[in-house]
Length: 396
Ligand SMILES: CSC[C@H]1O[C@H](OP(=O)(O)O)[C@H](O)[C@@H]1O
Image (cartoon, rainbow, N blue to C red; front, side, top):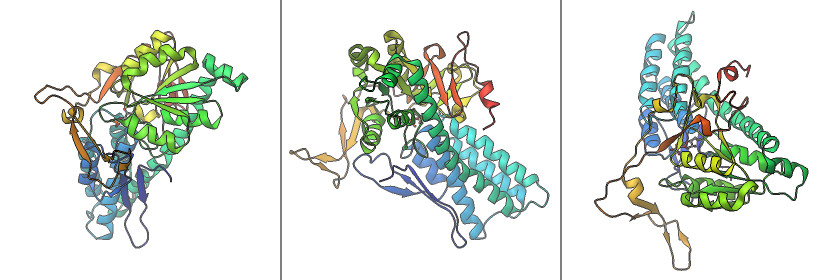
């Protein structure tokens, strides 16, 4: 079975494009896709985290508007002038951007897609249809580009680990040596259009026969690790071990330099390299530094936000207390069988009346980050500072 968070069918001669998302609130025990027919449905699915992951959020938002425009075009409900279509696209993108604040990929896509629509509307001979089509083509391209970017991130990351860690060099020279990595949250095919970012590095390490074991943290409270990353690692037959978030310290103390690196994703990398990522990332970076383990952020350039100077300027999303005080899942019978046909059980795991703080992300200071793995190479600090400008001059 292919792990696909997003299923998109382009328009055919007789029918508009269609979009479906894998409802990740039901994973790993139930695989159910949900049709997304318009921007409101996309906004709700992103906000509820039925679909999540910085790249996936941007792609689903962009394609939902492509579906909306495609349906309007085939049903004769598209605005008549090119500038009206441009304005509608701009307004709908601004609405989609309000679904979640921290991941920059959505805002980056909104800005780029607005420019596409504006350029199309300014072209001589522009029509409402040509502006609509220019938008749809650009939105569809995001799906393709993301997978190729992630595979490049995987290769750059795997090679960096092989060349810049003791475990990597040992494994390259002697396949009986162990190379292990730890990852946090979910950054795989379920957070992107496919292959993944940090999980893409793990996939590339495995493909190069470099990896002996991957560790994944459960990543409370949404449990992206135990529900999604563990699901992907089992699916790909990667030797992997799930740990609770609080076990990471003991793991690094036990594994020492057999753990080559901690590799995580990102929701927004500020211009100075401070990185917003899933809550719990900062503590792993401190831990990595204490134990002399490399700490790497894997993210496409669309996650690097040169307009945000540093981590203190990043808006951190705070989510509902119930995500901390309750857990949801199918029943398990006395013999351990998971009853996926049962309606999800919601169980309270906290004292009623307790206050809750539930930030979805934290910010890791650039000083704790050894490298940012992008699709065009690994950026390292020079004289203690990150400079991302050169990778934006990169030809691809
Ligand atoms: C390649 S996904 C990047 C990022 O998104 C995840 O957050 P969420 O599950 O809340 O959307 C997590 O922070 C990943 O590292």
